[in-house]
Image (tube, rainbow, N blue to C red; front, top):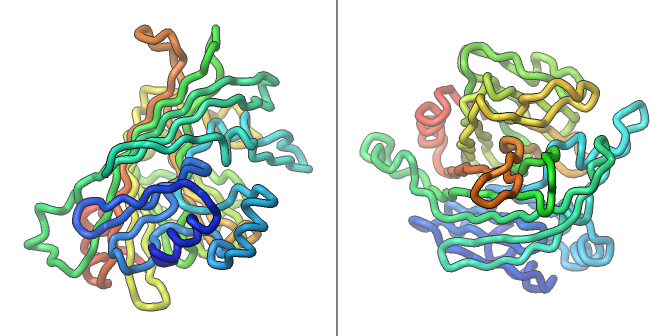
Length: 353
């Protein structure tokens, strides 16, 4: 979806948003509803690098799905509460019951900030299904421009690509909690299906399957990286523990128009911190923090790049139990040669499209 088409749709729906011109020619579209980065454009006249729901291209369908029915799955990048087993999974047995709590998404965000930054804030209550408790939480997230990490390599890499990038800071606190509760932020980037995801690892790291077993036709494990096909046709989810991942992972794709793109997430993972996410049927298997998801098409033709922040811990300065997260998202579009060169620099792999 082109930038001006997306903005026109958001205006038609009456949703508060901000279009931010970042470094170079890149643009970011921040949406108040759901606390999302809903648009990311290295080329101001090019396609959105993030997946958005097809209903947004049809005003009547968008109004029905997201205004009347209050659907949550808009696309873009969102922040949920983790661990998933506590805040989303009511039942993990043979009959899975999965819930997206309205207080988490779309939430009650307020969008503010001084250009070229954007800040979302909200307070709410969320149910912890496994612990059978309720958490009051306060979430603040700020995004601001992040310079091209390859800007000093332009002479070698050439100019056949466009770039946009941002840094994200998240502060999530348990309000009024007298003791520690399971709580951390969970950042999720939705991308259009049809490409390959890569995650940099320490050595030959076999990821954990969180859903159905992933076969060799979809997963490749090598020294220093894994490759995972995202085709939007079969539900699979891979997870890496904090000791396995470098915190850098990404997704490459070639669209029908011959445009090549690469999105790279840099999360700052601390293996000495506690990461709370677990497989649904192994609630004591903690430490999972970087995850790659392929949808089966029921929610949409997309994949996801996900990471979890460390668990909330009591901070002496405020007395609050707080989880903090810092990450960056770097996005490139251009020729096949340029994007392949960037993949070697940032992910250390030969990209397959």
